[in-house]
Image (cartoon, rainbow, N blue to C red; front, side):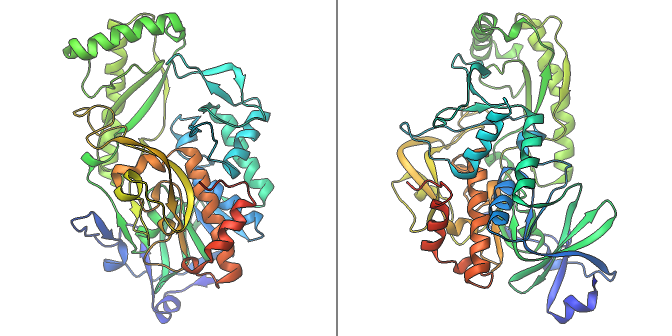
Length: 474
């Protein structure tokens, strides 16, 4: 069966092609995506299949959403443009899971906790050292007790463990596949248009989950999104792995840290531009800033950062100890973007929710009230101009996962509704897995109780189902 042009026109829908139509942002950075100037296509698009839940993006959030929906008995497909799951953790050499506790409590649990135990059983999960080297402490593997520290894994173990996790839950995986557009019928998305290796296909589903990290699904469907100017976002990185050497040892690192701090504060002219405030052990960390949702800007940043990594390596060789024979072994194959485009949701993680003792009526994911990090420039230091900390846990409201424009779409991970200054509260991998678990559970509940209307799910039942999955509520 094909989706034909006459079919979606008769339904009042529109096929929104990626890049079709300019998005105009208002003063708050809120914009509507493609359909304002969408392209109507005439060719038939074969339907790949019909599903209960389609999750787009196989990062930590997408994995959490797909596993939760499939475990709830829903036919679930997970679409990803890379050949493996894991998102920034496996694409950007970031195998650290930030299970920072709150007053001795592990508040990120559920599927996130399960995945850590899976890595531990593979012998691939250790707590970090506490000597500022940011290295795994191989004498402290993750065991059966509460996870009350940051955990380091290994990238290839993560890829395989994510695959196993999805397969055991019964998720259908469709990787090496790019989202190119959607079919929209009023306030519903009826199909995602994807480009497989064998050609374009349509995936029809009752509920969709945007786990793309930058709200690409909602944006291509013409939904309202929020994209801050580059100078308000976190900086971008391309991490490069250096050859092993004596700079990995605690003694040499401590001396190098002393040298680096002196250079940074007293002899900045001997360091490259836009360098970190602290020494990144064994890694070059050249960074610039720009729009992570613009292909031209990403192309510019990619070339610039790869060149800067060699400038930083030359600096390390010249100024620090143990780098005389160091060279760049490899670098991540895509820019590490810590924040990009977000949906405009029925609720938002905003200044009031984070910087006061406010709690929403429909809490679904706890967070520590800390904000500001990875500033776009070092003008105001690592934390940026807007940063701070407040005692007590806050919580993401369920409405922050529900786009204002759609009745059958949820978001999870980095692209939920959040003000840019407060992205730190939701962006780390365990948080993304947890918000994905919420989205997948809510998608299943919507199909059971509200004919797929995700905004009408009964909160009390959603909370009950999450609590049964070892979810923590503050």
